[in-house]
Image (cartoon, rainbow, N blue to C red; front, side):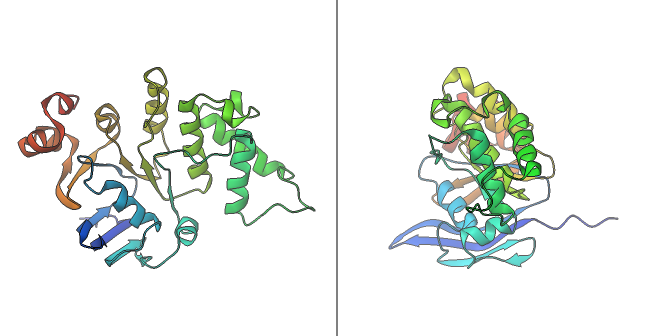
Length: 256
């Protein structure tokens, strides 16, 4: 009998307190290779705080975080990113005056430690330009690669954020509400891209949109008051009466 694959990301009794308020309450969590995992729960459940702890944006009060078996609890955001953990944010953090191609080239140069200088202008390496163009094509942005980022529809800006994260060639990608603020007419494109992300990247999705959650996730964790309430397959979560009653409501969970 073969052994189960080792988790790419784990937490052990992870806790974050802000004064007397516990935002993450002793969460022990494990993410296997290639996972498609969603993190859901009501507003204030601690979802974004948990992801901020995983990515290093916030320091943990106690507990541990492991990336590929290595304790990264005290590592910086940049060091975790270099070790294979990337994320997107609820609100985009793009430079409006750059083009998507320039944006991705900056991310690739950062990954390659090939920072631009007076002697090596951005885009001088054709292999990196080709890689950036291919990544934009993968996320349906090839036709806009030379456009001004600020001119893109908001849904396409969200896709560009995912492309930036993928440019680091992560093993784990944390998607924090990729459909947030995206108009209804653009949501399907975001849904399609998220569903088609590379199988070798383990994904954690934080999302209020249950269409996206049940379309994307194979397993789901539910947080409430910072604690892990229940975890299971999407079918198990969809049928769980506690989840229906307390977190999602009959109408939303019915999408499963």
